[in-house]
Image (cartoon, rainbow, N blue to C red; front, side, top):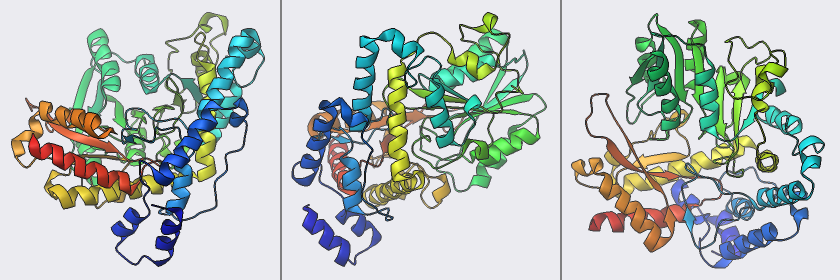
Length: 469
């Protein structure tokens, strides 16, 4: 679609909301999209000064302003010949982040000791970058530890707590393996009890979920460990309400925020959790191997968290737990510094605008799924916006039993990649604890660099493949 045509449509189109969204989408190969994306690639591979330049975008207050989001797309270095709808697994870096990473690595290689000990951006303590991120996320500097990924943060929390045999941790059947692995280590090592709750698929209301947790809590419950957004169905959990419930009952709350940071507009203090672990390399679009761990009121360390990975424990007179966790040997500080460039892009766009764009595309995708396969094949909440995220799960098969067939779902993903250069993924989960076979689904991620045109192309391709399998 040409820029002129896009502008005319913006001014004159009077169709449905879904049609308008489609009209404002960009093509994924050739034309404007290829030109914009090639400019992004050139910026990333060009001068190191690109990292230092202020990110600029035209003013816009419209979530569905196609020209504006075309410009946002141009900031990324995604190949123009692919449709990338799998941010839930791994994000793509903007050109400014890639340029920053390259610049930082060159400086580190050129003068390692200067970077480790004297340069703010790549200093081992990461004071500057922790301050920037704490302001962005609504936390205190002392509460933030920059990590490698979500998994590392979750293990810091779970393995750092002083739990004992018989203590109970409540989680769900939809939590990620990284968090569940930490819990099962404690189960085998210390004899704790893990209670995995079934969740409705799809969920109808926040209260429905809150009630499930209220019924599950016992006198032995010491920890609630949940995802902010479930990787399986994209359900946005009522985290604030659940953390408030936990706090009033003296229960510790741990939140896996892998799919929320960079996708939702929230404040960690307002969220009310005790611990929050998330990725810098997924929806925030930082480099691989970056993450964040939040410890509420870390200065007082109210839950006596042990710094399970540190190099300064016996040297620091038992100092602040976040400081001890930050000092855990040499880290990829060039990548952590580059992650802050991703934060700057989010700030330039506006976190609320990022969230609204993601949810707008998510709703458009679900409308297309319902039109193509029926609402009964959608496993993600549709009507309740506060339960939605950038993740959508569904089955593209007419025969009910096929939703249990992992081979068919994997084959769709494989053919989609080979035939169409489209990247999504499959997920599986139990609907009930007693299930002997897992439910399988396809999962699509919609992020700010995606478009309605890409969604339409993907839905058509999936239907064509699924109908032949």
